[in-house]
Image (cartoon, rainbow, N blue to C red; front, side, top):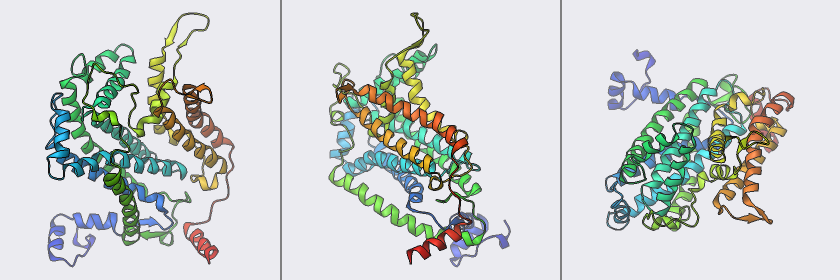
Length: 430
C-alpha cells in the first residue's frame, strides 16, 4: 500500500507500525470514515453488543478453563471450587453463565431487526446466511457448555438431546456413539464436549469476521430499506455510531450486571446444583430458555406419518420431531428466497409487519410451552396441542405467508432518499 493511500497518524509509534503493516489505516477505513446510513435506530446497536458479548464469553471461558477438570468424578467439584476458592471465581463464572443468556438476547434481537427491516434481501443474502451459521454455532456451543458443570440437568439434558440423533435412519446410532465416545454418556463424552466448547467460540469468531467483511462489502441496510444515494445519506461510522453503540452497550451492561450481582441463578435451573446421577431422572427435563421454542416444536410432534389405512410408517414421531426442530432453523437459511418482495422494510409493508409481529408472539409462546412439563394442560387441553398450533404458524409464516405476501402485498410508497426522510422527520418534530 503506497503512502498516499495510508492515513496520517500524529502518534509516531502508530505511524511507524502503519507504514510497515497498515493495520491502523485499515481500521480507520473500516471503522472510522466508513460511510454509514444516517438514520440508524437503536436496533442497530445489537450487532456491536453481540460482538462484545462474544469477546466477554471467550475471555471468561479461558479463565474458567484454567480451573475446570473435565472428568465425571471431578467436574462438579471443580466448578464448586471455582465458586468458593478461586479468587473472583464466582464473578467469572456468573459472567460466563449469564453471558450465554445475554449473548442470545442480543442475537435474537439482532435477528428480529434483520427480519423486520429486510436485511436478508439482495445483495445481503450471504451476509444473512453467515449470520445464521453463527446462530447455529452458538446453539451448539451453548448446549455442550451447559453439560460441563455435570449437574443433574447437564447430564439428562445431554442424554435427551444426543439421543435425538438416533432417530436418523441408518447412521443415527453411529452418530450418537461418536458423540458419546462410547455406549453411554460418561467420561469420554465430557472430555470431548469440553474440547469442543473451548474450540467453537474461536470458530464463531472466524465466522463473525466473515460476517463483518460481507457487511462492509455490501454496506449496511437501514430502517427505510432503501439504498444510499450519495454522501448526503451517510455519516462516518466514527464518532457518530461508535458513541451511539457505546451508549447502547452501557445500558445493556447495566441490565447484565443486575443479573450477575443480584439474580445470578434466575436464568438457570436449580437441579444443576445437584451432582449428576444417572440413576435418578429429574421430574422435568428442560433446556436453557433460549432453546425452549425449538424444544416445544420437538415435543409437539407426537404422531407418525404413514400410508393411510395401513400400519406402514414412513416417518415416525421421533424423527419427524427432530426434522421439525432442525427444519425451523433451516428455514432461516432460505429466507432471502422465500421473501422476494421488492420492498425491504416492514415499515412500508403493513401486512408483512402484522404477520412478523405475530411470529414473535408465537415464538415467545412456544418458549412458554417448552418450559412446561410434557403433561401440562391449559384451558383443559394438553399444552402439546398449543405447541403444535404454534409450530404450524411458525412454518406457515415462512412457507405460506411469505411467498403469498411477496406476490400480493402492494406496500406503501418509499421515500425518495434517506436524507429527505431525515429532514422530514426533523420538520415534523419541530
